[in-house]
Every structure is written in C-alpha cells, then in structure tokens.
Image (cartoon, rainbow, N blue to C red; front, side, top):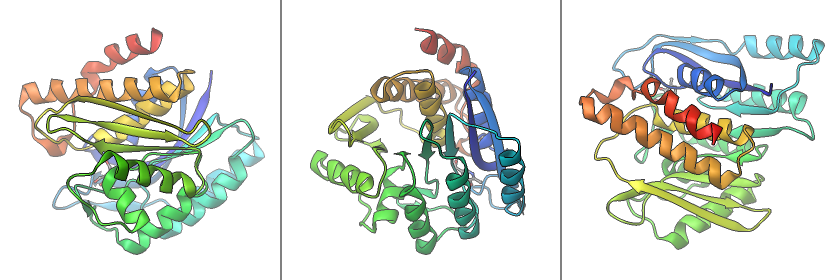
Length: 277
Ligand code: PXL
C-alpha cells in the first residue's frame, strides 16, 4: 500500500484540513500519515477559536521517522500556522524528499481576494519560497496573487490565467493547478499547466450559487489521492472537481450554513466508485 504524509492543522469542528484529508485519502486506498501543525477548536472563519501551536513537535517527529527510515510516496502540505512552521517544513522536505516521491503544496492562506485571519503579505512570500521546493502546487487565485504579488481581480482572461500558471512553474514546480477559475458566467473549475509536457488543461462544471468552507482542502486531498492511484494529472483533476461538485450539490440541497463545511461523507461511495474505474 502506498503511504503519504500530510502536514496541516486539526480544526476540531469545521470539516477542513486534516479532518477531511484523513478520511478522503484513506478511503482512496492510500495510507495517510499525519503531522498536525496546530489544534484549533474550529477553523478561523468562526468569530472565536482556540489555537494550540504544535510547531515544536515537527522536528522531533521528523527525527524519529528518520531513525525508523520512514518513506512516503508523497508529502502533502496544507494550512500552516506560522513562518517558523514553513522553515521547519523546508527541513522536513530536505530529509524526506527522494528521487521517487513528490512534494504537493496547497499554499492555504486565503480566498475571495483576502487572506484568512492571522496571515499577511510576509507570510505569503514565505509560502512562495516553500512552493519553490514543490513538485505540484495548488493555489486558488487569491493565494497565487498574494504569492506572485499580482493584483487580485474578479475576472481573468485565459491568457492571464496561463501567465499565472507559467509564473508558478517558473518558481520550480513541474505542475501548477489554479482553482476557482471561470471564463464563463455559469462555469467554475480549474486550469493546470504541466511544464514537462508544456500542456495546459481546463475542466469546468456548472456553478452552484453558493460557497462552502473547506472545499479547497477536499479538492487537494482528492487530487493527490487520485494521482497516487496512478491517474494522470488531467484525469485526477476531473475526479477531484467532480467529487467536490457532488459534495457541494449534496450540501446545497440541504440549505446548510457554509462555515460548517460540505457533506463530503455522503459522497465517499461515489468517490470510491470513480477511483475503481
Ligand atoms: O480550509 C482551509 C483552512 C484550514 N485550516 C484552518 C483554516 C482554514 C481556512 O480558513 O482556518 C485552521
């Protein structure tokens, strides 16, 4: 069985980061080792939340794993709580990157043109430095704009999206994926660029008129799970977009409050069927 390690926070309520990565990637038949970076009572979109920083555990866990000669097919990072943690991850990458595995970075920092509570431009530039060490980077448009110091806009042309993707791969990664891309009023989806094959790829679904929290983490978890199930980048993107779309639709039908995340659990059988095909 393949094993990845994912490094992100535990938000005890709110269905994002580790509480979605662990069930989704496991359901896709991949052993999911974790390093929790922090424990929060809820994610940071709630008015109040507790935050226990677990940074000091990261080097200790890495040291122990090195002694045990632990290996991972992929290293997947998500929400990180501080610049200090980013530095620790650079060290972690140096210790656990091999010729056979890949580093997948979701630079979780913001959405809708704004950074989440607790982040600033300095953090965004440090995250950009971390992305230089990645093989695959998966920002949304807000995160890409903060890292590349570009103005965030509501609408982009295909030419502009391609430019952003190329700029992202110029940092180092072989593959860049932008989420939250839309060229038509009723479409929403992703565009990717593979530097090695010089190919762009787009995949869109009909927009559901609502935004839920945690869907970016569900997307990234599904994408890496599909890639580790030997799907091409393009097929993996289709699986991830389709699964996220199914979870949003299921939640939308229930008219649920957005801060509590989507009904991803109801659609796990759908995801497993897609992976088997
Ligand atoms: O879904 C991204 C995310 C992950 N973890 C925490 C968050 C957020 C977004 O707000 O606050 C703690």
